[in-house]
Length: 302
Image (cartoon, rainbow, N blue to C red; front, side, top):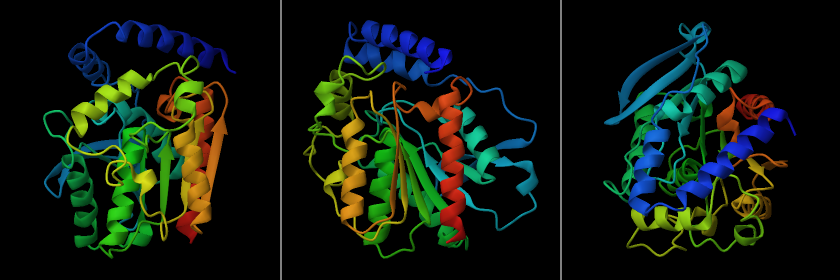
């Protein structure tokens, strides 16, 4: 374990303990404030520009060397935050690192958040962006889709919806610590409760109540782990063995393999939830992103 990882875990653990003393409304305000800040430092070889696609605000994070390459690969990325928080700011630094390492254009989607916009608003936004890319003539064999935590849920659910609509699928999925079972049946939900530096079951229960108050937790549309996984593209999952969502990722990997899908699951010890997002701070995160870039290169070669 790196010293940076040790310190980040200590900081996150203290912050989690303090947040559990707040009401759900107070936690929502605190989480949104924390995840609205821009923690990135940028890179001189990476350009960032705002855009709109399918009526949804988004942001391009792309290597400047690809600006003249109309056929460069694109990764549609959906940020985490429990469907109630998170922003382009909170994930721009990760996008900068991954765009540089993989030499892809990162399309960061600013989908609508609950409780103001509950399910299925985020799903509609993600699908609208993907369909807009196809309508612009972008071939699916140049597309990837990714997300972390709730964004990983949204990426997998969107891929299932794309398949069910008989649209061309992206070449690969990249999921960092995906939150896939909103009924929270995984054994790690209790086994890792004292180890997870960031998440606690109550935090997720509150997020579900804001995001999908009228839906059944095992509904495949909000818990894609319970949906049909056959016919999906190659999938990379990155997870910490210390987080309460560990079993969401491990069960997905097992079920994808059983369905005949090319699935790779990278497992890390003692790292925080969704740690690849912390690329500027953690060497473990940068290592995970390098392996993610390798996966992207492989699936794009076809």
